[in-house]
Image 1 (tube, rainbow, N blue to C red):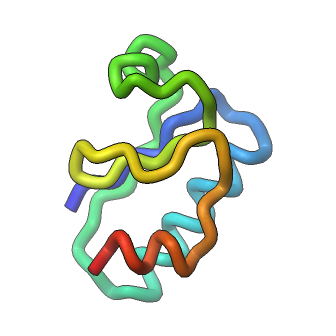
Image 2: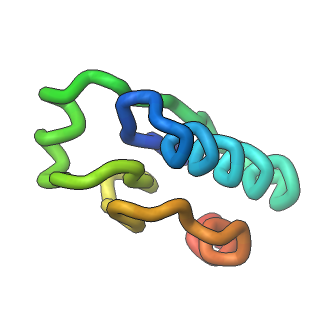
Length: 76
């Protein structure tokens, strides 16, 4: 599983990455979490607001920090 947290480094972007990493650890799944800060790559997902979370190529959250429960549901 590949998870990308898209964001330029703002406080919400850092929090989103933290929540995603906590959920992955809690779920015990084999997932690679990657932080993407390159604006061209972020826009390539059709995302116009950050933070955003992409799970296996599917945009799951845009413009907000997802709740850990949401992330856990995506990991199942």
